[in-house]
Each structure stands twice: as C-alpha cells, then as structure tokens.
Image (tube, rainbow, N blue to C red; front, side):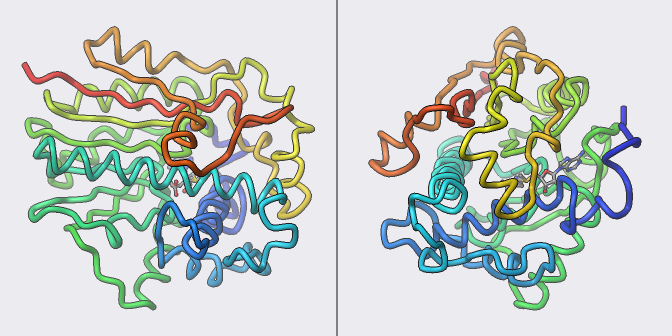
Length: 303
Ligand code: SAM
C-alpha cells in the first residue's frame, strides 16, 4: 500500500520536509492563536516546536510577528482556520470522554498535537498517538526538553498510515471491546484513497458501540483549480510548502457515506458553521481553498 517512490524517503520522514513539515505549519498557527487576544484555543507547547525546528526558522509564533496581521492569507486567515479547528476538535474530544464515558483516545496523524499534555482528561484516559517515527521523535525531543508531563497515559505509536497499521493498537493495550474516540485532523488528503478507506474500515472494526470519530475531508473534485488561491499561493511563496504537491490528488472516497452505510450516525459541517457558532474564525471568500473543507463527526450507536 505504501507509495515509496516519492514520499517515503528518509529526508522526508521527519519535520524537515515533505508532509511532516505540515505539522510545523499547524503548530505555528496554534502558537499565533494562543497569543491572540480573542484566542479560540490555547496550546503553550506549539511555539516550542516551531522554534526548535530548522525548517520553521523565522516563522511567526505571535500575532505581532505577522506583517499584515489578519490580512495575511497564511498567518492570518489560514492560521485562524487551524485555531478554530483546534478549538472545535478539543471540544469534540472532551465532550466524548466526559459525556460518553470513553477512556481511549486515538489521534491518527497526531503530528505535533499536544492534546495529551494540555487537555484535562478524566482519570484512566489513555491517548494513543500514531504518526511517522521521525515526527514523533522530534516531538519527544522538544517535549522532553520542556520536561512536559502528559495529563493522561500516552502511547506513541510510530507507524506509516499507508501501511497495515491495524494490529498496532491492540498490541499496545487498546481494547476494541471498550468505547473509543478517534481524531483524524488534517491527515486524510495526504493519504492515497485506498489508505483512507482502510483507515475508516479499521476505525469501524476497532470501535465498539458508543465510540466516536471526527475527521477532516476535502470535497473539491479538482484541488488544482485552487492552485492560484491566496491560501495556497501564500503558503507556497512565504514558507515554501506546496500543499497541492503533498496532497494525494486522486479522487477521494466518500468516507462519511461509508460510515453511514455501516450504521454510524454522521454530521457533516463546514468550518464556517463553527465560525458563526463562535463568532470568530474564517469566512468564505472568492477562490477559496477552504471551500470544500468539511469536518465530519460520527458516532457508532450502542447495541
Ligand atoms: N493532526 C495533527 C495536527 O492537526 O496538529 C498534524 C496534522 S499535519 C497537517 C499532518 C500529519 O500527518 C503530519 O504529522 C504527518 O507526519 C502525518 N502523516 C501524513 N502522512 C502520514 C502517514 N502516511 N503515516 C503517518 N502519518 C502521516
């Protein structure tokens, strides 16, 4: 299943380049969001990742370091998108563990997500984090340097999600008979369609009734039509990340439909729904690379 030709070289395995560097992009956005006066989410660890990595040298970590402020398509609007996403998915996870009495949390493509360290988890919670080994190694190097202590039991699992990863969780103490909550934030569009379908089927197979899943999808049929959008252009020109080159541009599977067919209840939202709910966040614009983004929330009914 792994496409070794382009994406799986050692040089691209960490946060120095390739898809791993997108974890730094999200971290920088979270750092900026943290220091906004009207912040939607707080992540005190985010700026430390950005400041530690040579690939993100010179990137802003505070609003005052962004020339143009909110008018900057990358560190203004796109960063705010990540801030809103962080808040919405923080709320989803905390709601799931508290209301649903769920104690297993799985972050797929966890990157530099510091939720295990910054959210108030109930006693007995375990957070499993899957990402590629080099990304997790960088994360641990930074967090160890800060003497950061997780607020839940934390189980990092270095895996390539294009390969057969299903056995890793039960082998690491995950109990498929107990309910779980899964997060797939900013990942699916980097995976080949077959790996996405395998991921969705694996989540379904390892989820007992009462489990929940949130994931982000992109509905655009032709992402390249947005190549000249302010968002992709500024990301390319300001920090040298060509997201369209990193995305897998093959037609996407209908993962929300697949879950619904399998008996999950699903709710599909635009990010703008949450902008309105919170009174802050990105709004639609012309030639908008975020137009097709959807945040999907799914629950598996109890038997
Ligand atoms: N979910 C994190 C967040 O929102 O902060 C990280 C998002 S970042 C945009 C994408 C992450 O997906 C990176 O950490 C990258 O290493 C990970 N990723 C991409 N392809 C992967 C693969 N085949 N196997 C494991 N992780 C992968």
